[in-house]
Image (cartoon, rainbow, N blue to C red; front, side, top):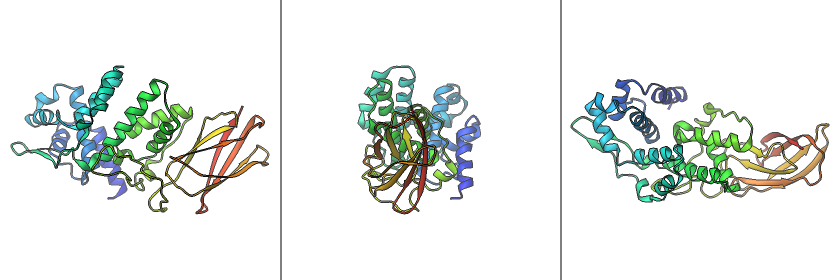
Amino acid sequence: MNPTSFLVDCAEINDQVHGLDLHLHIARNEVDSATYGQLRWIGQYQLWEAMMGDSTLADSSDVLADFQSIATGTRYAHIWGIDTALSAGNDSAAMAMLNDTTAFTAPTGWIVDSSNGVAITDDSEANNIVANYLMYYNIYLHYIHGVMTDTDTAYIAGMAYLCPMHDGMVVYQARALYRVLLDTLVVFNDDSLCTAYLPRHGNNNNPHSPIYGTSKKLSDAQSTQAYNLYPNPNDGNISIIQRVADIDPVHVVIYNSIGQSVYTGSLLFTSYKSSVQLGSISSGVYLMSITDTKGNNFHLKFVVR
């Protein structure tokens, strides 16, 4: 798919969902460029959200009324219900819906109403998106209750670097939480992320399987590696997160503000995370240089207080 048309198509679904004609095309799965399951699912989920926010839409068309009626029993409705409960501060209701695992099982094939052309495309092709929502909501509950783990942080970091147009608009929510956790502005280049997104490692027939799967080596064509660290500023105890799980060691050198090396070592990552303890180190600005086994270099600036 042409990357430019790919992003334009997603923007059309995202930004023009107020138009009745577009509503009808999405309900009937007639968006010309929605040629694969993730984009179809994203469009129909956004239509569901629009209809839940505007009760008059169902009255405007028999097609939309039927779409709403049929979609009530799908994962669109269940995920929207979780999001609504969390927005209202009803954590117990959100948790109950998250624990209802049967609600996240994908239907076998599309649900089609031949009388008006409605085609609900909530099938297994979108399992990776559904898994992303489930992961995000569970981690968000951990966050608001103050029980987030390092693994949670690593998963949010990984999700933040996914492609919203392939992995769901929940990626934007993960990015917002990621920025809060790191207390810094991170810029995400979707032009790159959406043309070289990380292939799913989970079982596509199981929406509950891990998105990121077992750590493995990935070719350059399969992945776009990135690193980040937190907290920043810190006291010399630093956690490092990689976007793509890689079992190979990396070489790390840390320099002070006058270019002196204050740390040299080899790090291994487990569940996307590694760490460095600098011990007693002076306050100041430092540069961490990371070199992987392919010779790629990554540079991270941080402050020690």
